[in-house]
Structures are given as C-alpha cells and as structure tokens.
Image 1 (cartoon, rainbow, N blue to C red):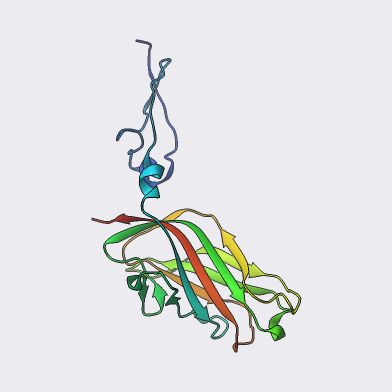
Image 2 (cartoon, one colour; image 1 turned 45 degrees about the vertical axis):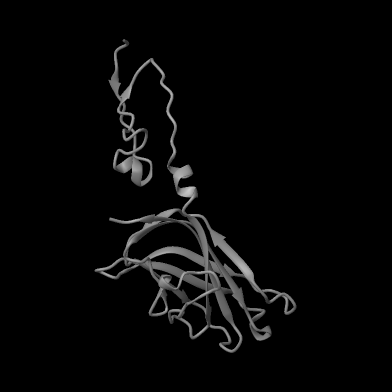
Amino acid sequence: MADKSILAKAPDGLLGALDLKTLGRNPGLFSDELGPSLEVIDFYLLRNRINIGFTSAFVAVNTNLVMAAAAGTPANYISGGSITVPQQEVWRVKTIALQNTRVAGDAGLLLECDVFIRRPPNSQNVAVFVAQWPAVVATDLIRTRTSGYKPFFMGPGDFFVIRPTTTQTAAGSGYVFELDIDVMQSG
C-alpha cells in the first residue's frame, strides 16, 4: 500500500462539517489508490422535496408581510402569519421565489422586498434574500417574479420575515412567496 498523507479540505455543507459524507466518513487521507464511492444524500432528499406557496397583501413600507398558506401548503407551516418550520422538521431551503402583483399606479416604481430568517431564541433577523422589481409598463403588472438560489438549513421553530422596503399603493398590491425545500425529520 502506498504512503498516505493527511488531506485537509474545507467541509462541504452540513454533512461535510459533521464528517458524514461517504459511507459515514469524510475522506481524511490522500493516497495513490482510488476507491469507488457514491454520495447519496441528494437522492435520499429527493423523496422529501416539496414546493410550497404563501400569499400576502402589501401593508406598509418596513412592515412585515402577514402570510397565508396557498392551496396545497400544509397549514402547520404558518404560525401567527409567519412561515415557520414545525418542531418536528428541518428544512433544506433550495430556492426562494417572490412574486409581486402591483396596481397600475405603481407601474413606474422600483420595488424592493427583504427576506430574513429568525432563529429562536435570540430572534435576530438574518438576511437571506433581497427581491427587486424594476419599473414596468402599465399593461405588465401581474406576477413579476424574482428568485434566488442560496441553499441553507432551517431548524425547528425558525421562521421567515418578509418586509417591503419601498413604498407602494396598498390597495391591490400583493405578494406570492414560494419555497423549494427538502423536508427532514428532526430529533
């Protein structure tokens, strides 16, 4: 067997940080010999992948949106108007999408909305996404969509805070918030 030397590499995501990559082991040694391995976490999580949606009307600038579950979204994902991870689940958020429907009076405005997560017990906002919608023509007001890909994990009790940061006409303006997540059982 060839001499082996220690391989120092940065962990890749949560599994890498916990040394749970291949067959329960992270590669820790570098050798001239090659051995086959298969990373199956993405295949495992595919069976737990769901797309969920939420809706809200515009209230006021710098005021959190009060979300309601869209059709097909489990009711236990809403708590007090916030999108909340249930106590028995952990989410790997893969994609966030935010859509804006505006009234004709807002067509010429640049609109912006910040998306945060809060993690109890300290409940401080952690920015994860900024949505921006440029001015549009008055005939193109429905479902202007912006999305982002920034995978991260949310634990039990974590929740989203969605806050418009630009003024718009309240009557008729609204938002649709969509998540592409992998759901895992906690504990």
